[in-house]
Image (cartoon, rainbow, N blue to C red; front, side):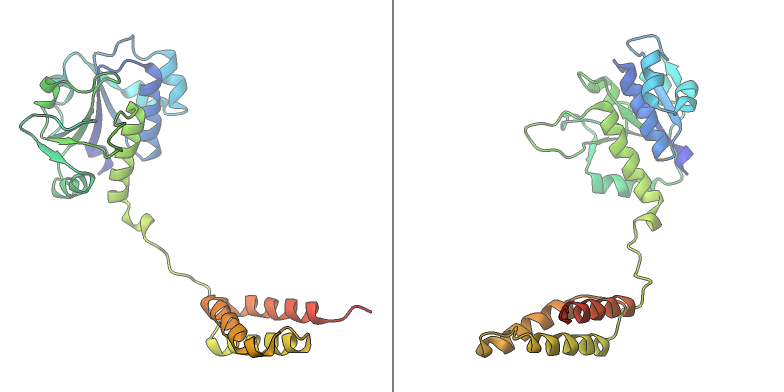
Length: 239
């Protein structure tokens, strides 16, 4: 399914940004990169160096003269914009983006990013199906090109790999409350021999706090045995 996604960079200005985009794509398992009219001869040395091992993506990148040609292989095109545009397109939130990907999971989807300095033109935006804005603070919306690509790669990766993001249950068996109770009795008995509960009228309150502390834990049997051994060792008088 990942091969159905492609990334389209419109008139990128820096080779190192393209290299960083390729690196992020490879991090998350994507490999299709199209470029429209880069501002330099591509691929250049900086693009390759910054890709840090994603040479295969750089070497297989397709370069086009127009945006229309670059998006030709895709069924759905989603444009990225740092600000909301006054254009007759549906603007997506990140949550909407996930829903769109689920709706069009059998379609070839292109993600289009504009030049570092100016972003996508209205002409480029007119060729897309949707416009996606990555949420940021209001007073600083500009995101580096490669960072934008990384965020979008990660969002798609999460959707395609839900099992990786599910919280795994603990495999270690937690000790029963009765065993915790025995350990606490042992602790309290030793504390009493050391005259810990002073003043006496606060003893019950102090025991209550100790109970709150230990019953909140989820120790296993081994951890309880270690705790009991520590308490016993500390209670012994040195000769």
